[in-house]
Length: 487
Image (cartoon, rainbow, N blue to C red; front, side, top):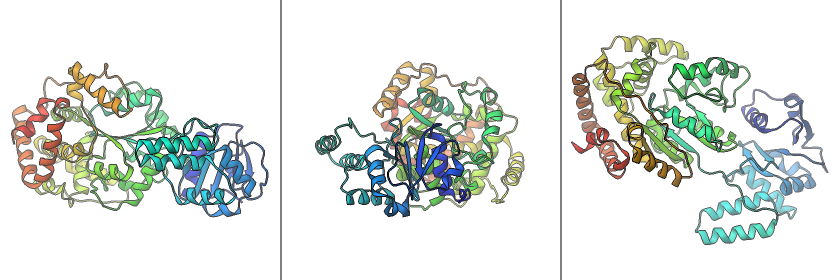
């Protein structure tokens, strides 16, 4: 039977295997997987009774009861669960892969089958540690000791830690921080997971168009691989489960809102990562709380002086970043977080199946506005992003302060270390502009108008952020604190 390429759950499981399975390794799976992995020995899950050595097992959620008991016994004894997508549960004996950290129907169903044939499996061992993690340390120690008594060969259970979400706008230095995580080797780093390029681009295009030359063009640090290197990508282009709406349409999400496609996409990437995943978002600020609640993440907010940040926007002839800000505003004008902006600076709503036509429409809208109006839109997005994202973040990195103040560097490094995110920031340097395209007196006027607008329309969010700024004041530059101290 041929491999069902058009089934996304089959394809997700196969992409995980392709990313992690080495040449010569053996996998036990449905016979359909033979077409996808001709270079590997694939043992039939349904007919294999007493298998020899294998490194991988792919269990179909609905077929656990049909798997031979001896095969289940060997999987339970020799392997650990490393991936699950609702249809498949993948096991491996590889010690370099993290074990699943969330029970699921497939995991529980497999456990029931294992218990039915009287086995103490590594899966059970991992779940004991998970259950213990919800209680105090004494109980955790007790369960850990009991698990090691059941399986003497296990020194410790490997539990995948919480994902790390970096929230920022464009041109803040977030690529520098993302690359710091990537270079450390201890994390699996995703660059801008909501970028529209993941809708269509191929791995080859990312390699040729978004390699070292692109990094230099963007004034980014030198990269060891292209920006999209860590993503699973279809051979004909696009990242699995990515939707056009992720880039702009779904920009505003509040607690309790339903966004199943977005949740599934981010969850897929988190499961796909062989190490602790780090997501560097530039389009997440007004859904940072939603993401935190859904994925129990550690959250970092990257902050830069708005005037320097906007001047960096203007340094690109394409004006992409200003146009993208107008798209976000136009697409989300009905949101209570964006409505004050679109009530003040009329930005029409336009929707098309073709993102290129949407971009062309908003490019014309942006080009028809004066520089003060464009700065008004930017500064509104800058301030409302700060209001919404900062209070839900564990760590703030004010790049202007970190670049200029050695004590601030050490303070941020200390906070990162407390969250098991060690890095050194000695080479952190963010550009400061000596002159601005828009006169500073005009920028001050716009900033005052936006601040007054937000205080009147989003007073609750303003006061909540004011409290967060007060708590984090040693890590926030005076320029940014003064926005709230003068109110």
